[in-house]
Picture 1: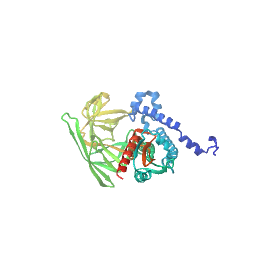
Picture 2 (picture 1 turned 60 degrees about the horizontal axis):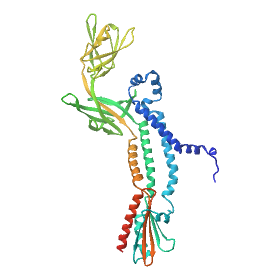
Picture 3 (picture 1 turned 30 degrees about the vertical axis):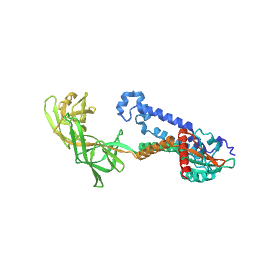
Picture 4 (picture 1 turned 30 degrees about the horizontal axis):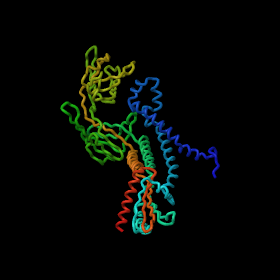
Length: 463
């Protein structure tokens, strides 16, 4: 007899009992439910500036430190999932050890009195046939269609019981559901840790390998390159885009390994990575003309510029760096077309941002500087916008859903039932009694007993 007190248990035993606790399951599930409410109420992966405006200088730093803006990728949410996975595994193992003995017993027990009290018990006489003859007819059928067959003599020593059962294994259905939940959580965890999502713009005729991670100021390189050979877009009469598609080539080690026409909602899958057609737009050519106009004299100065290149202002009064470009700039709620973004560094002054819409050359005049700046002679190339994503946990998630459906079907629509045929001698005749018992779904057991009785009657007549 084990008299060891819980306090005397080893550290491993204490850890095992901790993870086997139902209370831990309840706490973890409630915690995940509450945190998921935060993840629903607070929009995830939005612009940090929008969060700062919404929550103010007091709550924004706190929420940001707790990763509430990207909650499902936070370390503490992953930790909760890991704890719940461990709790589910330990609880299942601990309960399965006792259930296993019930599912696979060495000697199944049958109690005749339970069958005699069954509400669906059926009885009928068979004339001129002994219990021994009927036993020899029914026993082969029972061995073929049922498991754990046992033939016993009745308590009086005359007549027989023929016991059998089906579906003892269906008690494993609930563990299949547990296993499916485990796969779903593992798939989500693996996708959260090892998956990624980002965006890549590939101009026509060019090849790109690096892409920008979503909601992170980071770039990542693919193990292969993506080339856009052609891009086309069709429009409705209203001007709204109807369809856009790209001719994409996957290039690896200098060789084209895959060519495909990429459409919206029809991604390319290559080496576990999905490539979606997500957007399109225009990108400026290699060079363009930057025009400076003196506000006082009206004199114009022109210089060649390029994105990422710094040029000298007229008279050596500073430098202008063109930093970025958008093909659809919005000003005061109105779209004013393509625009360049730059930074103006004047001697003795703080750097100032400048916006230079191509179709509105006098836009910069509102800055009221010595010069107002405009962009002319700009050429454009079409680019295709691609969404790059990888989620290595998806196969586990799919497997989890399939196993969950199977486990639920077994749990709710299949059941363990025991059947009994009692052969009672009555002078030169025999009375047959058929009954079934089950811990649940008694109506189905009653129907099963009726079917078995009908089958036995046919076998008796055909003997």
